[in-house]
Amino acid sequence: MGGGGSEVGQMPVFDLGPFLEKCILNGGEVDDDLEKQCKALAQCLKDTSALVVRDPRCPSHDNATFLNMLERYYAQPLDVKKKDERPHYHYQVGITPEGVEVPRCSMDPSCLEEIEKQEKQNKATIPQGADPKWRFMHRVGPRPAETKFKELNAEPVYPQHFPEWEDTMTMWGTKMLNALEVVAEMAAIGLGLERKAFVEKMRNAPHLLAPTGSDLAKYQDIGTVFAGYHYDLNFLTIHGKSRFPGLYIWLRDGTKTPVKMPEGCLLLQAGKQLEWLTGGEIMAGMHEVIFNEGTKNAAAKARADGKSLWRVSSTVFGHIASDAILEPLGHFSNEETKKKYRQCCAGEQVQEELDTIKLKPNGLK
Picture 1 (cartoon, one colour):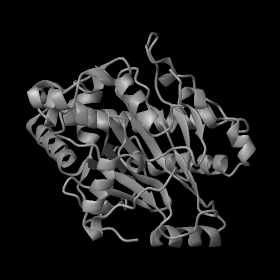
Picture 2 (cartoon, rainbow, N blue to C red):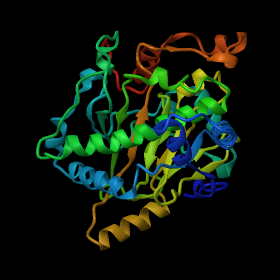
Picture 3 (cartoon, one colour):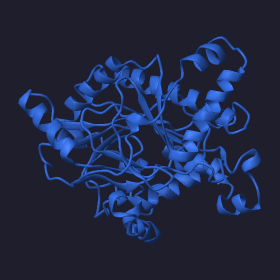
């Protein structure tokens, strides 16, 4: 299955190092060159809902350590993994088995209509039922002492047989979240907001390290949809490089783009909360994960080399704090945007989204 348009590898790569060094580590002011970079970064988010960045604190070998452990975890028997399931917490900690998470688009007539209007080379695969992927949710960072949304801020789950679990998950999750926070500061500056406008709302939020696991030994047909066409409900999502291709994103102009990550880089995608805070100036990015020819070739090589056939995503969902207010900020606030993006707690928005994608059990309050 091909993708139209350019490749993410051809998008500009934003080096977070200069801003990190001068403004965060040394407390310096934003100079003209850094302001220019911030504006270019914000413009890229407006145009594509995505970013490719490089952070000197996130080396490839740390991503590899994380992927190695998750491949071993997902290779465990079904009954062992099921012990880590927490449906009463909306699957926001622990394991979500395959066949549970339903792409919102499959139940949203306006989304299905959007797919129908897409040009052939940019057309999404229409989601059919629940995704055949697993996902493990592990919280990253501190949670609030008091919150109206306790089920979104639950204690983490620690699988048996993995003594290195907490250290490895904390190491990689924290590094990616730190990179995401630098992007949040730079984006705020580039958008003409206060530098801390976003990160202040992210304090004690329910950030999640949320790697997916797709069994390429079980699912081998070209066109198999591991993650149906959808947007992310959170603020910003950040990914390390996967060992198997298959992720497609849609740019704001409707171009479907296969993700080919440069080595040592991270991919960020705008989520619904960022769209909300900017009054739609930055839109939540649509994406899907498909078994394509590239996936097939990578799986064949992994099989020949005796390596794991689990496709693991290296993913952190950066959130706005559950009790923080979602509303268009600063100059993005006007009658039109306030009508479209109502004022509410971020936790309310998350619960409504989870209910739609079937991660919130019926009747759970």
